Length: 201
Image (cartoon, rainbow, N blue to C red; front, side, top):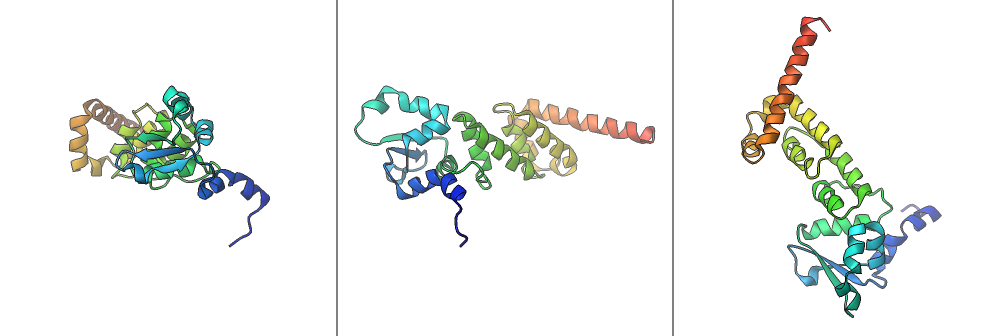
């Protein structure tokens, strides 16, 4: 194992105190787990990384309790909460692979812009015919122009495969307006291709 540099030690300071469980004073619990499976953290670190967590921890009930507060992230699974905490305590360069979708949503909800940027990059780099519709839908909540454009481009390129998939049928039922946008994008692509062919470009 390579020896850690002074910079490594400095950047890994938060992760180190989490690993030691040094003076942890708050618990994060997923919606699918019981209190015994809660993940320990530090209020100051959560507040420093997220304005939403800071606001939650400033509420009266969080000030008066003598026991560790429990924050329930009902929309997340245990492994996703674990990944979120690991990122919060990281040096900011930790990849989001494996939980990019859930961490992208968490980054928006809990206002952690840097994590959202990393997750967006991961989602874009892993786009393919099988997940493009899901990512396109994800890009609408809230609207993310870069993610939306990348997903729509991927759908256009793979439209022959996607058009005959069961995923598109389900997608069209729940997202009729987005399906119309896909059709418009496809028609526009065809028109541009025909124009280029006609004029020899």
